[in-house]
Amino acid sequence: MSEHRNGPVRSAAARDSILDATARLLALQGYDNLTMEGIAKEAGVGKQTIYRWWRSRGALIADCMIEGRLATVEIDLPDTGDLGGDLNVWLEGIVSIVADPAGGALLRSLVAAAAEDGAVGDRLAAALGADQTLSLRLASAVRAGQLPEGAPVDQLGLAILGAIIVPVLARRPIDAVEIRRLVDHLIRPAG
Image (cartoon, rainbow, N blue to C red; front, side):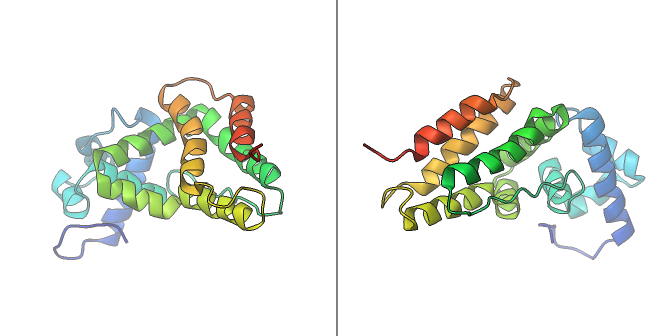
């Protein structure tokens, strides 16, 4: 359940209407043009009803994403014993999503929502878990001897995510070949 203000339980129908309206307007207008007033009008509720449930549009967007109303993104990172191959399979899925204009816009919206409200960022990270997924897979590679003992798996994962996120934020094309080169460099055994 989302982080709601204290108060009486509100109508499930109103909540669903607000979440559906948010998802629709976000897809049509983008994050920058999304307003609580516009959401209220689209949902057929008062703005105060929205604020009883969510303290910010970032929190509202987070609930939409977590509940699968914006996109259903489930790209598993396999563990076949071939770290490079596994990361390439995962990267293909991620890059195909963010290279699409709608996927890039969604990522920018989620980053903006997380930047607007730290609690929203924490909830999105916990729900989506891309950084945790990478860290766990990289830690498995350390145990299997594919990465050196003591490799900074959390930082390696964040470097990979940064190579995906930063170009999307800058509205530059994603270069999958360059991201793969970075990954290969990061996981190459020292020596």
